[in-house]
Length: 299
Image (cartoon, rainbow, N blue to C red; front, top):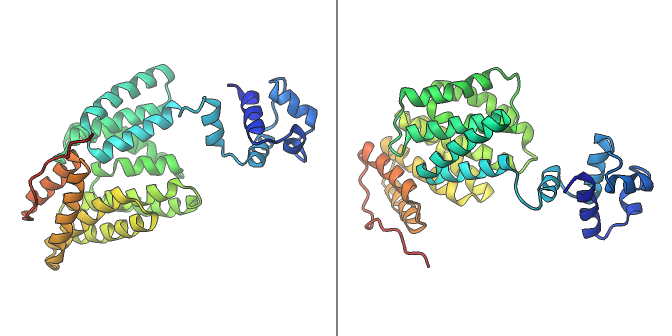
């Protein structure tokens, strides 16, 4: 659908007359012309119409695209899901698809998606930092450093490449990220972005053996996940926190936290994520008695 058709569909779906929608924004006959695609209102009036219709601009685009997410939005969701599940086969597929879109559109977002997928594939479930991975992330670092101010896209991009940074570098840029992120706290995406930043920072510190920092970041990640009811993220954050606490020699209760959360990952069928934490436990010589790892059969 085009712009006018979409406005008309939402208006009629909500049982609004042209007079009700247009009042105080533009003349009724101008709205009629808009809906017939003979007139396009100024941008301020576009947003006034959307506000009167009680739809966000993103929701408007979704309706305009016949209730299908746009490619960029779909890629963002699929990459995020693949990262959370450590699905490297899917990341290979998304990398090729993103680069194909980049060649067609020259949109830098698809280039960034390609680089993130390739870097994560190099990183792998065993968390191996290598030169190829660093090279893939380098153009994204330059892109971020060239920005005077970050917006939500850049903040999420930064969170996605934390694993490729040195701890000091990540913490330094995180101060800027959290300060800037606070400005976007009225957006729903703020919640996930804030939590993922703390979770990714705790993982990075664990990988580099900075257990004190890992513990602190993981504790905040747990609190944030609890506040926003992010169950998957809470499990990962609690595991990071427990591993850091054990390495710091703090209390035996953390072994039980690990056992419970590893059982949850196993029960939910998060095989690659389960493997990821098993490697962490092995790396830091943490022994926890776990049931035999077996993914449940799904009907």
